[in-house]
Image 1: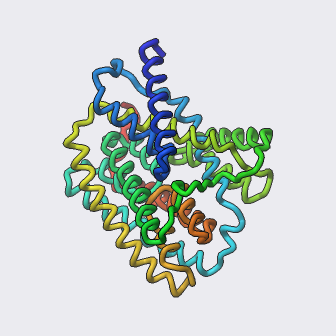
Image 2 (image 1 turned 90 degrees about the vertical axis):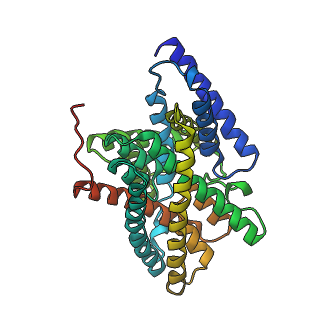
Image 3 (image 1 turned 120 degrees about the vertical axis):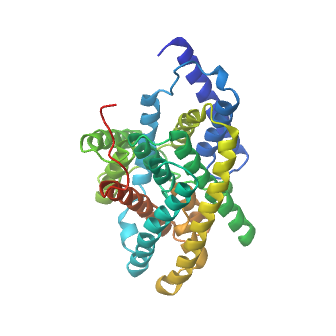
Length: 357
């Protein structure tokens, strides 16, 4: 890496850390990822002339921290998630209906808006931010557009839903209430190191067997296997999980360099329509699930909301509303979304990728 590129990377990371930790101080939802992403995105849009020619965020740094995120998501997959019986089966069945209909409904919307097939398709995924972006890059979609639409989906859901529930319930929910997925116990550093090694191994194996978005799904599956078998406890320090989100958000933010403001305004409008449609559909399914599961509308609605896994689980935790159940729904949504994306691509929804380029 040349000196200008190294200095620019350090600047990007500094901006990301300032944005992420600043958003946390303000009590914003999912602050470390979104605060970092917003700050670096703003810099990329407004100061594009300061970016060195040919600059790209160092991928090894981004990939290393994505392993951390994959491990923490996978650690939420415990035997307790599969002990819910009929309510879990009913919720999974609803998600099995929700994901493909939301995906192809969104794809229709984005194609009507003029996006090319690959870009429209990966903009449409109702979950799996990292996975959708990784697959979109493999299929040569317009990355700035895909990142923008996926980012806006998350922003609308994880900002509007916690605020709406906070107003409805009369108290804060989610990360704004100070909740976290990391267990508040002393960190066993050898076990934490072993968990990260398992995640790195999962990433390596995932690349070898061509898992989609292997750098995230490989560690996720490795950590899930460790968690389900009880080989050893997985608990990483909170600062590491927070800073992993900061780094990933900063790396994504650099993708907006040079993006025109008009495109961003248009993307906001499309995201509002897309998310509104998904939330209405989720509300209908939640109402239908209530008599089958015995759970409240708010719990089921959070479980069906197409937002971030961590923030949706945090909201469920703050509601004292079976966060394991909600987490299971969102983990399944990610896995199902990736599966539907792969199946659709293999069935010829998109033209084949030319790997010779």
